[in-house]
Image (cartoon, rainbow, N blue to C red; front, side, top):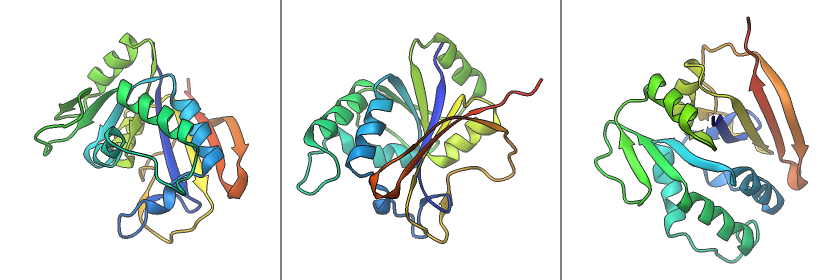
Length: 191
């Protein structure tokens, strides 16, 4: 049975996008990018909202550029992981997808996601704060991975849904050069 993991790169004040919807500030530096890539290795399926899918679609044709954070090897590893995983995009407006291992679902259905988790031998991630918020509300998320970058945006799109109470158990914490921090939590199931 696979776990459903929500990973997010956020500002210190908890935003995944700035007030204009930009994410250019969120590119992880070298060691953090290598760490994220290692965490992604066991992932077999990505569940995305339309916006996150469109942002990640660049990995299909991405080429490393000079001065880019991380090594060429890490870049190539991450690209290979993404290209070899299945992607499910939940969107009512997206007509088609251009990536070969992707399918579109119109509705985010808890029962079908539970079935996907139960039938998977590998872990999956849910990407995009809106879709992840739905998964959190439905009790589908088994782990939350937060990568906090040393920037304050002062507003934007939050990484978590509002109006949800969730007690968490800390699984892991790690500090990186340049002030980034990784935090991993598991929801505490109350009896």
